[in-house]
Image (tube, rainbow, N blue to C red; front, side, top):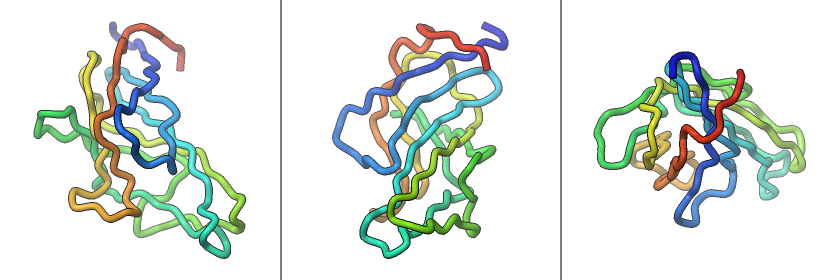
Length: 137
């Protein structure tokens, strides 16, 4: 399994945030990559802004072990932020975390442990058949 990367199509059991949308998850022994798509909210004159908290982490449900954010691609880490120019702007970004074990599991993505409606927290993300699709990165 060394140096192999697996593409996982996450299954989100309950209705949750649709913005940003989780597009895919890549697992390997060096990192866990989660790709997102985000559309600027219509309610803000210029689409608002976006960032990610530096202490964002993932964990397996039922475990207290946290896999820390190690890199963010195409999204600023707070206190920096990206200001949208219009309500029709969008952004695709990737978050890289310490590697989780490559096995079927259910994870949570936690930006803030006591979240408000603006935090990017996701619960009950099922990673099934994680060794089903090997990809080259």
